[in-house]
Image 1 (cartoon, rainbow, N blue to C red):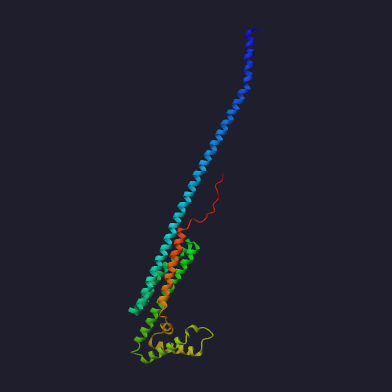
Image 2: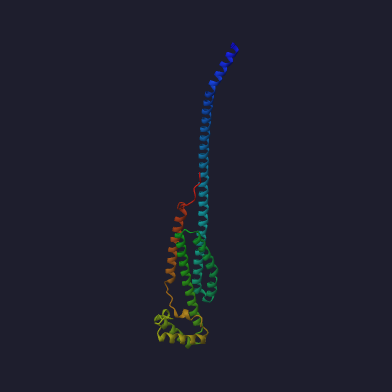
Length: 270
């Protein structure tokens, strides 16, 4: 073999020997590249999750702020409706002293206010939470009780006024009506109407009163002539309402400043 052939064989041998080393180096480089890529993917995933958690937390916070604002407006609207109804109840009560004849119109004017308050109360009950709903029902019940006291007082005053106006034309009948009404009230027969304990005397009084009131044209006011109005009822009802309003404000303040309630939401899958 000449020298040229020997050189070619030697070069080929060297090339063959370098192939495994090249493959090994290439494998290491590929492995290193894959590890770098995986690390980059993990870093990107971690960055994505952090951004997603931040957006989700901000979204929950924005939703909580929005919900708190909705509830605050609902609570304030109900409280204002209650105060409007309370003010009108005072007007009903004072009307009985100034001009009892106008009392029915003032009482009728309370119906739209009552409807508005009922609507506001329903919104609060829907918004919750339960402790606020309970406090709302209590304050609405208290102001309705106050209005009932005022209505009873106004109607009772009107009944007595109408009876006094009949005195000139029907003095004997009016005097008899007054006596029978006083007897009925003193013996507390009103609470016995419709019960087995209703005595015969009470039935006889009612029968005579219907006849007498019919003769002077005053059938409608009879219930208010027979029931006794408590002079302290207005003050007591007002005090209960003020307590209920204070409780409602305290309960709503606590609810509005409380932290967000736990929300069970599915976690983001990997």
